[in-house]
Image 1 (cartoon, rainbow, N blue to C red):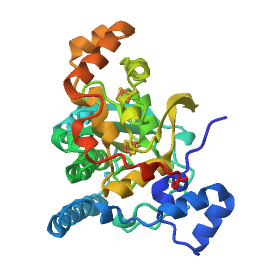
Image 2: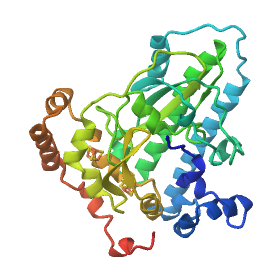
Image 3: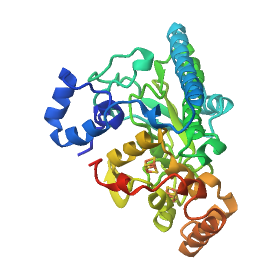
Length: 364
Ligand code: SF4
Ligand code: SF4
């Protein structure tokens, strides 16, 4: 029996629940073990602990707000586009080219099943004026074109400092822009279509990106792209346009993770676990989301240390990657060389942690 994803179970939905509201009471009546650890982390002011001057913080907030506004504008524009009554198909090649022109570095297609969709939305779309908590996604879309946009490397390498947060936010905007461009084309050609954004996901994208062969699921449960590693954000266009579907790809990343585990070793909260868990046939790892989210609040950013700890994020050239495929000694050489060049723990992390009291178990 397949696991149904429910956006209400995501930490970003749960953190938005306001104590004493009917939604809060109903959720924790059904999930009593989550109440205490969630309450300890509640409140979404991630920026509160950002270690920058008040002026810099105001500038960062301004830039984050500007990204949110741009995403809202895209959805308003999209709603105003008239849908053609006659269907005019587009080739998959042209559809993917549209995404590529908007900066996508990889894309693939999946055919959607009922279980790919969230069972219910989690109310994470307030930026778009959506009040969808508990509502069921519209499941009329048959296909999803899933894609990845890159995050700025210098931003990711600065993690967990402020530039990494801006790299994340900017990539979310780029992914909405790319999604908008393709969704616009498909709507104008007569197909029911929506595009995902940071604020709107009818389905979780990591499973779909895995199915579409964008990359493999790394130890931190992100998609790891063979060239860009962890420094990507995923987008998707959900549509009734039929496209030839893709399949998962073996890039050798899953095997490499078993020899590497640098994200696990560098994670300041021990959120990343070695233990595999298979969900709907896809290989994930166990993960402590409370521990991870605690670091978001500690740093005032989305942490992202796992992103910049990954050898793939720093780039493994294609020639080398092919030679380490199913070849453990070569994988070990790559890990060793990565550590020789960059250190096991990037030096910029050492000055930021580790404080003993962070691991006092309070987040549990
Ligand atoms: S974001 Fe930070 S705390 Fe969360 S898993 Fe990655 S390294 Fe660990
Ligand atoms: S850091 Fe290593 S273990 Fe973690 S996702 Fe990257 S390759 Fe896999």
